[in-house]
Amino acid sequence: MLLGLFFWAFMNAYAEEPNHFMEIIENDGIVIYVDIEKDNKIELTHLIAANARLHKEVINEGYAMKEGIGYEKRKIRIYDKTNIAYFDSCDYLKNPIPCSIENKNWLIKTHIYIEDLHASLIVNLHDETGNIIGTSSIPVHGWIELLPQWKKTTVVSSGMMGQTKQTILEQWPHKQKKHPPYIRSKDVSQALIGLFLSFDK
Image (cartoon, one colour):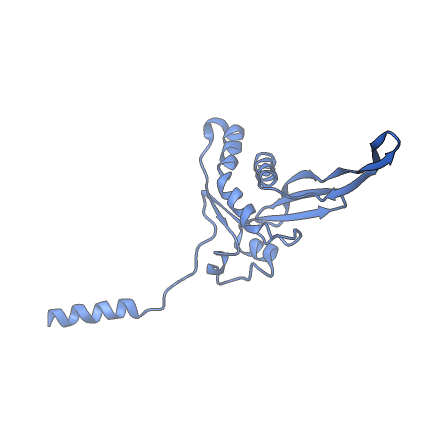
């Protein structure tokens, strides 16, 4: 009898639908969603999210400097497209700003403006109201490689004094090869550190 009652209670407990909803906002915490980066030829979303996780404690360092003795450490959580699917209530991949406002979390949006030999990596930080509270901009430069163009010819001729050799060197203006700007991991790291240090607290 007792064993049957225990088995019935066990089955009822595990028959309920699992709850995948995750609470986004905490009183003592900050949740940041890293939006998809679409401007670069190679998507940088994972690199940006990784650096955000790596440097997230810079946010607490900024709060500590501002608040002094009354400082309380915030728990900071970083989400990106790989784990944001756990939030059932909103489609972050399509509507990152409205979803962030609805769930009261922060948002990192990245834009890359690319010219011929110059690019700007711009990272914006939105608060829970959608306002931009911080911006970081990193210039990235391409370069021009000068390739020498020349031709060396040896001419052998025969005369009364025997064979003679003459070397002729022909040169033309250097050929220019353009190397476009490439966003590197150190540029992303620098941008995130600057963003987390300088946003309005």
